[in-house]
Length: 110
Length: 119
Image (cartoon, rainbow over all chains, first blue to last red; front, side, top):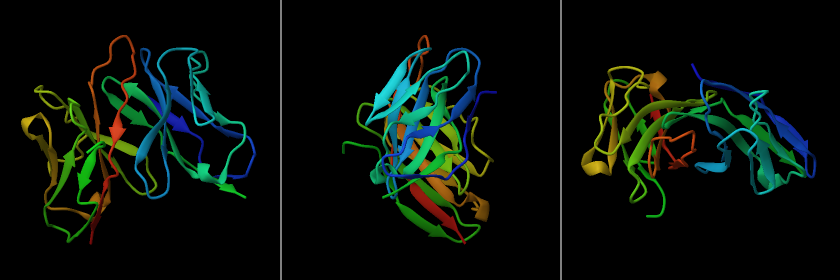
C-alpha cells in the first residue's frame, strides 16, 4: 500500500541554519504531496502542497519539490527561526484520504 | 466558526466506559475525516464521510469504534468500552470535497483535536 517515510527527529538547529527534512513516498498512481506543521499547543496546519511532478510548493520561506524520479518531497528552508520549532508531517493523498509520515520534530535554538 | 471545532478538548475516562467526541466541520464542507494521533506515532486514518455516500470505515481499529454524521454536518465518534490503548488525540478534519480528479490535491483543514486519556 501507499506509505510515507520521514527522517526521524528531533532535528536540532541553531537559528539561521539551513533546514532539510527528508520525505520519501511509495504510491501507485500520481498522488498529491503535502507538508503539514503542528506548532506546540496548536492543531495541524497545511504548510505547503504540490499536486504533480516537478511542482514546487512554498510558504513562509519553506519549499518542497515533487520529485517523481526519486519519489521524494524534501522540505527545505534557507534560514530557520526559533518560531519554526514544531513537528512537521509529510503526507500523500490516497483517494480522498491523507497518508501521513510519523512526523519530524524540529527544535531551533537562538 | 471559521475553523473545524472539536469537543471536548480534553477527556479523561475510566477503562471500560464509553466516550463520545464531537466534530463541527467548516460550513459548506461536504467531506469529513477522523484521524488518530497516538504518542510516538503518526496520524492514523479512521473514517471518512462524503455527502450522503456510505462512509469509508476502513481505518477503524475495532468494532468498539463507530462514527456518524447527522444532516451532513456535525459528526460524533464513539468509542465503546474504552481501553488504555485508545488514549490518543482524535483529530477531525474537513474539506470542500473528498474526491480527487486527475490527482488534484484537496486541502484538508484540521481541528485542534480531542485529547483522550483512558485510566
